[in-house]
Image (cartoon, rainbow, N blue to C red; front, side, top):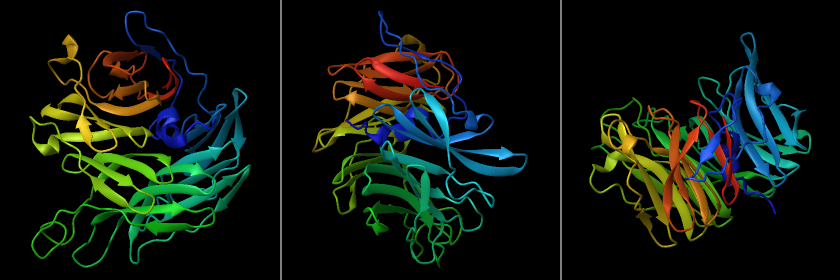
Length: 386
């Protein structure tokens, strides 16, 4: 069975991880089991950056990233198979004119798709490259007329003939100067084509968006894209509070999700999300209780509505001070999920929550201050990479 790449993109090695030299332990209660990661950092990543990774059952994984010789930057790619890394040809756009952010999603052991942007200023054009075996093929990406700074930075491929990607672009037209809009495209096996997506705006009289022409006027910020089929995907993120969009096979539409009731709406946000089925999705994040202090937030989609999950009382050490908020989440099944906390808060270890099919309980990941990433393969067996 193919390991769904919905979570491997961000959770296995991750877009924000520069090194993976430490082994982390996951403490899940009084008789906590320890799960250690089998993977190690690709040699090509030493001194550089891992942009994204994706895995299928095996595990067979492909990582792509950035490195440099002096002041000259370049992309690299590597495959993990049979307990070792091997070098792959780099994605076609070598970044000689600029280094953009690439993401990857693999549907089989020999096929992956990568999307992103060139990182070239001004303009920042979109990229899409298909990896077939050992060969990369550059693909055309349609763009809205007059758009700039276009990037497809969230990606999920269910098969070699179906992927969906989301991102953003700047409209660059009168009264929309520097105004960011969401964009989504679908791969049908032969080409990419744009599909409808809701992009919330901040409206002002006569000028949309913002109060004056020019300046930075962003739309919603998608944080995670997760699909269970060609006709069901979910985006979680934030826009004046938590933000959710759902894909029905034809278009994206906004779904209403509650913000934490006892705080202003804008204090709540999603930073992660994953779906096990069309009737079981999670959004993870947090809500601000004061300047710089957070509490974890989890919401669940039951097929009809999003509802806030009642979490157990915070451990004593979190009841005062900055607390923590959740970032990543992954599920091995409907009965086992782990959500990790943001390590940028001054806590002992990196804290999160574990779902056993009945209740949520707090967990602590110890061993590193770096941002860990997580992939859950089986019940009580999550692999963590630093």
